Image 1: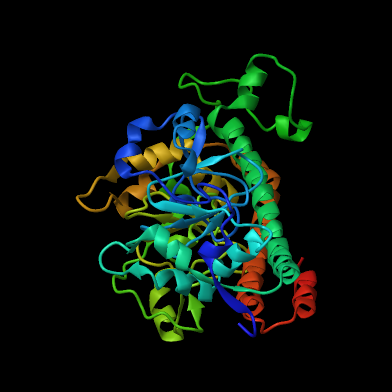
Image 2: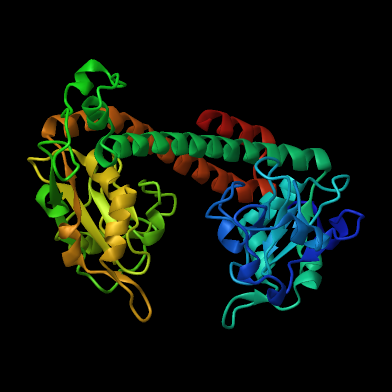
Length: 446
């Protein structure tokens, strides 16, 4: 760390009661205490690889949080798991909620900002060196955990350059995280728009119902004219039919069982962690394999732009679409779907697979196993949906594809931003790279 002094984290705590605290005992945080709204409870699953949260929230009542003030965390405080996902760290954001609550597997510290920049401390523990420092205190026997959480937290060592330099380093890294978060929020909006189009056109039959009721058009005239003006006896647009995924797409399973060796260089083999819930592929952490293994794994199908992937064991029914510019082999427990030549509408296919109706259909066909749930691959071609005329499917492709393409571009940019951040992080934290040089690198990618 150059000439930077290593300081124990406990000495950087704010001079107030409860600056360092641990979550409540498990017996005090039973599931029946959760409420529909209130104070969000931070769990290990909410900690992401950026400053943003991930996953779903559970809540407790305001009164319960008031009764355990030491377990309440607010803006700028750091949170560390002491059980489960040990080695992770989060910093409480300034937006979304006024306060959060620690789960029983977390501990917190409020930094004295006269001594250290909380964001600098956060980014240090995000680095390889910082994570290794945390793991020094963890037992790797059974479920990872820190045996004496609070005393260990106080002994975590952190390098401490002068405060202005701390803030400059955290500002550089924060600019990358800010851009990643902006792109993520934009993608949430684009995803919502895409799903709304699909739901209106192919689930609620909005244009057809509006035409049948004599309502005013709410689409462009050339689009409006494509929809039937009446529903049939089955309450679907006249001329549309119920069909199966196998009628419009080739369904190819990955038959390999033994996972190949990971390589430093090579070609990508998709893993479950690459499959996102919004239909995108996240290649920030690519599992690369040798050319020989790759050739073996693509013997049935090489996933390419527009193809869809569905997971069928464990995390059943997660669906993503291969972005433009990527080819990959499908990993274990994945099935590939490719539009047939007479139905060249991959955006319709991905939105159909992501729809709530299809998710319910997948759930109905999923077998609950003793250890893992499983979706029989033979069931995938039989998944049902409403098929419109080709004119409507083509119009949907032309309308929604630009939205998903922008999502892919944003995700690719986020992958590049994350790679830049993760490259700079250890170098800035060790003093191996000058601030001015880091600033120039960041300027190029923002």
